[in-house]
Image (cartoon, rainbow, N blue to C red):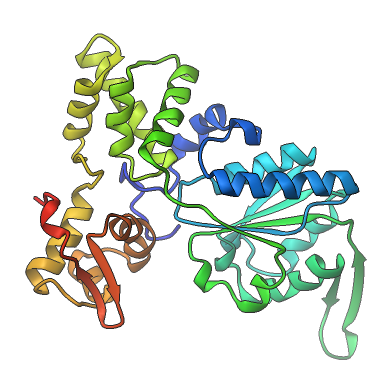
Length: 332
């Protein structure tokens, strides 16, 4: 997303390195997907019912912070349904014409995955409504008296939308989804399983203590866990004997500025600004962003969710405020 500091190791936002490596780590079936148990069970029922009827599964909206597995789940749904998936993103669809080629080339049962669907322009969103409701689209050519409408009949398909900010999705758009799933942050125990699985696939030797050390600093996010695993692997290879144990993982991540709670320099500066500059708050997010010289979206989508989960931060009608739990966390 625009404005995101992609250099942050604890950002759930995808880096170029992640795109390449995560393809080999990505699970292909629901049984291989770790965590999100209730979501998986509900998906199993929906997929099984759709397959028994011989129909595409209903349109699905996946929401949650970056890096929790929304794109991975979309691929898994396609695999479980035996369907082909076409992926795009909200910002890439600037005008209705961008969708015509995609929609008309979808085969029956195919899946259209739109990442960051809340950033899709309203004119494109409205063009999509009849496509997902009745599998038809009308495209207008020219203007005025020369205008002509071309009607396209589409083959039944499934739309899977992913969003990090479901509150920005319009009511009419939300109402057209049959399933709504919110992905929660992962427990350290689930992340240990994910890290151990990734280590096997990467041919990296890691102890249970090493996996837990990484898990506790991964902000409840598998994408961050896999990223920190690779950094710990580098450190173990150069500074150790190649084995990632608890001590090696701790030293590797401390050198990268990631503390035992998973907080990095931007998190600590964010909290310090509220504490020192604004006397603990409440303070508006725009003021914090201006003081830190950071984008508001970066703070709202990447920094705040985990701080809210830890209970360090509060969102109030008057602005952001540090909580009474603040003193238990070390802020440099």
